[in-house]
Length: 153
Image 1: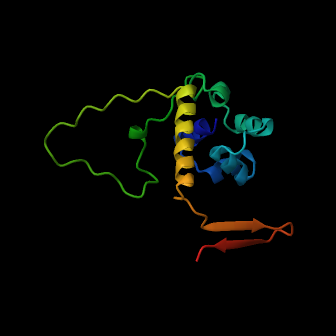
Image 2 (image 1 turned 90 degrees about the vertical axis):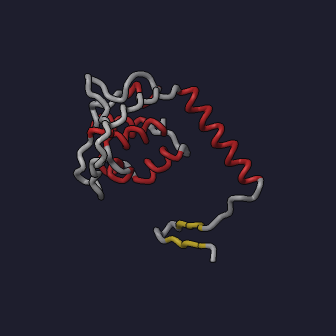
């Protein structure tokens, strides 16, 4: 579900923080769900459904159907306006016609997504075994709402 939630945030062009604030959950909750550490609870899904009634919950939870219900279509990235973008794209100055767009890739099945995540996990485990990864920062949170950050020097 974390992959589909990330797809939704991208389609709506909102950040994790904006989404968390909108549906009234802790920002860390969204981060943990997207990272795959936690699964969303009923309150999370209910709040999301209340604030985004056009989202197909069957798609969000089980990956079945389309992202949006009631005939609403997913935004086409090529049709988005330049508003809010840092740089505007300039039209090419060549006289040759624009190439035909490639067909959109098919949406991955849940089995393909699981397989891809397993491959990523295996690659990560190999890197850890080879000693490629190392800790560079540790943050300790105390019950008095203070914290201490330890970083590699």
